[in-house]
Image 1 (cartoon, rainbow, N blue to C red):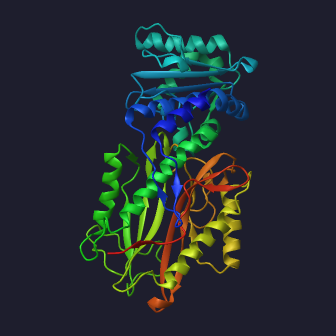
Image 2 (image 1 turned 60 degrees about the vertical axis):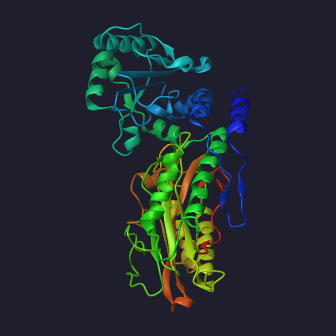
Amino acid sequence: MFGRKLFQTLGSVVCALAISSHGHAQTAAIAPYDNRPVIENTIVEARLNTLLPRLMREAGIDMWVVIAREYNDDPVFLSLVPKPRFTARRTTMLVFFDRGDGGVERLTVSRYPLGSLYEAVWEGGDLAAQWERLGQVIRDRNPKRIGVNVSDMWPVADGLSHSLYEQLMRSIGPTLSERVTSAEVLVVRWLETRLPLEVEVWQRAVAIARETIARAFSNEVITAGVTTVGDVAWFIRTRFEEAGLEPWFHPDVNRQWQGADFDDNAPSLGDGTPDAVIRRGDLLHTDVGLCYLGLCTDTQEMGYVLKLGETDAPQGLTDAMAVGNRWQDLLTDEFKVGRTGNQILAAAQCSLAKAGIKNAIYTHPLGVFGHAPGPTIGMWDNQGPTPGRGDWPMYPMTGYAIEGNVTVPVPEWNGQPVQMKLEQSAFFDGAKVHYLAGRQTALHLIRD
């Protein structure tokens, strides 16, 4: 039922996704504001009905309590409630209780209702009465393990403030307080796991990002000798803002060029000074992230500004892009269910060393947040194991930003090294990695 409703909605507001021979996303329509809650709420309902019970049992938690205050939201809060909603109202309390064969009961002890997804179990009163009612709800159900959002490793699982924690302990009393435990495993699994319905929506978000980059790296935006890298960044940002899309960081645009005196050992080559003027023969790079319909993207692509008389980029740059694609393949070949991020990093580094590819890997989970919870696979400033987050295992139905770079000498530039800094949003189904809207396999060419 919910699947048909979602696809009917998508069909009315989203064009079919097309991918050009260069892997550029095209014709990615953007849903108008009034259609977005229908799509998002269909997904939230499906996740609460089908995913949450399984994950609570997997985490060994039979009650999950999420408490948020207005303008001090728990990071997980908005992923649990229907839209349109921008923050918790006053103090909002959610209770999830696993009744076994009876399914997971969803309750709200709050002044403002949350629609049909939650049963309201408080008739009103002052804040003291609200806390008393929450304590009664918990005591009546007598849970074995009460999960709350406290964590010293995962910021997204650390949303219960100290004062709220203390009030909760007072409300449930000493016996039940001994059953309170961290819900960090449940929170991470909830935030990292995607349903097939979400993947369909996610593809549109990634297509929008890639289509915007294709426009930005074209003569629609760039005039050699006039346009700055800052101009291109603001074109991307403005495109998102005008379309009601939420950037989760300001776009980055930078340039490399023949004869540039870069530090070959620098983590990232290029000049990203906002007023740096783009010239013919420049190799351009951008890093773009947006959030749409509750899911985030993270994309880095490369472009080249043709010199007078050129019809294509120098072969050395084309070859460097191919090396970058080979880097992606060798990395994602190591994605296996149950492997930790640190294990994947080590295996990929071994394969890349055998292939003779100079590279850096800083791949991260992607989803409700741009830097989402899940297995960290290298960091730009640490190419060794990442304690804690790198020890998290890989699960199926999870998303990743396949992010990193390769450094390749370019014969036409007298052997000067360039970096192909690539990042594509991808989905791991448990057996295979799928790029959500294709991947870049050829440079964007600016034919000014």
